[in-house]
Length: 284
Ligand code: 13P
Image 1 (tube, rainbow, N blue to C red):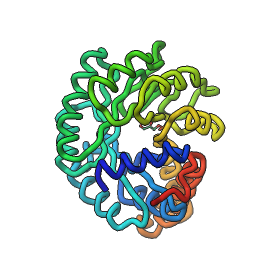
Image 2: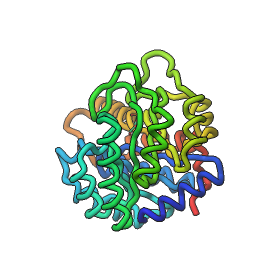
Image 3: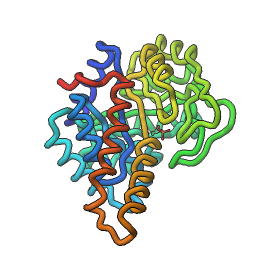
Image 4: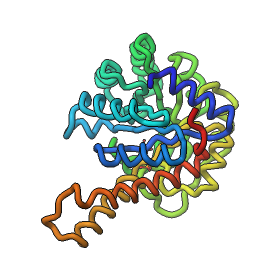
């Protein structure tokens, strides 16, 4: 799978009125569970690897094992670099064959965000990868740090500028979603999302999927979201299920003896998300 495959999948999602799921993964067990879920649902899916993971396992290792599993999958599986804040690392990921790269420079002034995204787009496009940028802020605590301030909403004119001036392929927009679990009820700005969708012509991305209601997610999809990121739900399912297995089998258990029920729970969580985003039966 390459960048063009992702563009095709996003165009199909636009036509069909659904969204692709990008699931944050850490290792071979959650990646394989997500791919199994996607195969069961006959859904295209994205495996999102956050740059933080490279502190424990090199980028190249992710590139090789996820791409190998994607190649063997019965449905389209796209490897994605999530929330990368470093232009050089984005380029390294392109060189490693990541078909999809997110450069997150949303914390920088707009001009700098645009310049950094343009540099990654120029590099990635000549090598067949696609790029996601971000405008506005995703609230809450993420791998990239916490953000709880005001002014998180993406400004429509900033979205238009970054799209026009960089040629970026997809755009993550701050509309009130948060990374991690929500404190209280999520409060999304559907109006802002609709305005952005009217103003820019590229697929929009919703971050902070965990904790959103199916109704809200589907409303966002109706208003132009074509990729929905889900991370915390996968990690917490993984960890809680592993904890339950350890309690059942004792602390000297082998990973291989515990991992099947853990993977089954991750699979179940991913299937629910695919259903929410209406990606089932959309693999072509
Ligand atoms: P959650 O962890 O809130 O699901 O968000 C994931 C995400 O947006 C990754 O980019």
